[in-house]
Length: 118
Image (cartoon, rainbow, N blue to C red; front, top):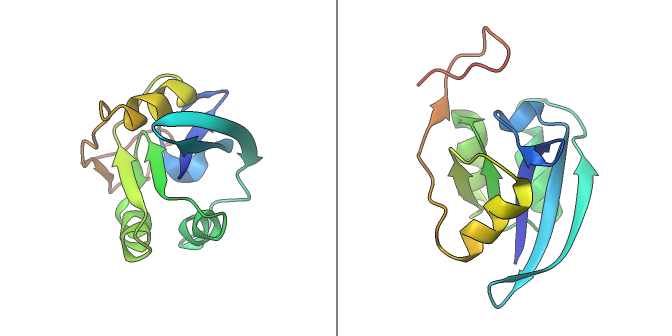
């Protein structure tokens, strides 16, 4: 299993598309077996979900995400967890323990940087 966490300086990013990087965690039997950071190649509508799908991602974790990205992930059978915060690695570990659940929060407004409306 591969888990991607939208990240800013090792912490879960507030908004998926504007993160600086993605921490990619390989996991087996509920444990992280490897990790690497991949720079965000750029925010363009529809691009990042397909990019992460091409990397073999099974789960994406973020603070917030727009509805269009969520729809594309759903079409690709990639589980979306939004509403996460804290350390990227701790978020991935919490997910593997079954302790991290999505809040379902979808970003609809992008008029102000770092502000997601429900």
